[in-house]
Each structure stands twice: as structure tokens, then as C-alpha cells.
Image (cartoon, one colour):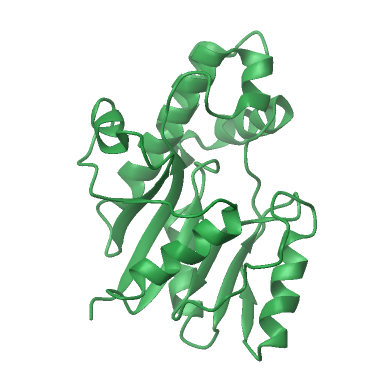
Length: 223
């Protein structure tokens, strides 16, 4: 069985249907361009690595591969439709699907384009001694979750709340699972998050170069 799959949870980049809170501040077209930049940075960073890259996309009826082909600078790779209603259910189904083919699975969010290859490699290394590896987000959720087996650490947990991380840890430990945490990062949902990312990229634009260029071109007056 091959080594590690890296799945990116992503929404099909369609104008007016992505990151609506951010779009209310900077506009739907600008948000689309920004999200495309996020995906381009993630694809460029992870498509050439040792991990098998997979896009877990929603909505299932969208032509996700064609949408990405239109702007990605690298081949799209494998695309897997997310199955389920709630986010927790969809995450679990990604693990169940990929666990049939890979020894370990790392799942990351698509709204943190500054996730580094080093963080993903650290998650893979942590799986040697841990059952569940989590990358905490500073809003109380997580931007990364990794497991060697598809343990159910999702059901019964209300996603998109400030207690997701803590409840996930507690649920894992009740099952006797060893949990390891990585460094804390932030995701981009609102204008204040984008301003924070812009500030970060001013000091190191190579963390997400396509995103840095996009921010510079569309939001100068906002940041």
C-alpha cells in the first residue's frame, strides 16, 4: 500500500458561492480571484512533493477538475467528491475513502494558503507515534487533521464553532487515541483575516506568492 495521501478540502471556485463573509467586504469577483490564488499556491507547493495529492471537493455536482484546470499552473491530479451533509461527515468519508489505498492520510483546509510543506511533513512524522495529529487554528478549529486509520473523531461535534479542536481532542482521547498538536495557524474567512495574511506575506511573500500578488493587486485600498 502506498505511503501518505494529502487531501485538500476545497470548494469549487465559483463567483458568489465561496467565502461569502469575505466577499461582503471585498466583492465577489475579488474573492473568486483570491480563492483561486489560494488553490494555485497549495497546488504548486504540494503537487511535486512525496505525498499523493488529492482534492476533496464540494459541491459534488460541480465540474471541479475543469474549474481548476482553467487556472492551476500544475496538473490538477486526483479529485474526490466530498460525500455527506455536515462537514464532519464529509471529513470522515474522505478518510474512509483514502484509507483503502494509503497507509496514512493528511487532510488540510484550502483557506490557509500559507500552510507549509514543513508542517505537512511534521504531521506525517508525528503519525509514527500518534493516532491523531491536529493543526490548531486560532479560531478554535483546525486547519489540518491526520490519521493512519479512519477513526471517528467527527460525529457529534458541531463544526465551525470555537470548541471544535477541544471537542475533537476529547473525543479522540475517550477512544484511547494518542493526539499530537502542531503549530497554530489562522485561516481566512473575513477581512481582518485577509489583512493579517497580507501583513504576514509582506515579510515573506514566498509563503504564498500567488496569493501575495493577488492581494497586492485587488485590495490595496482595504489593507
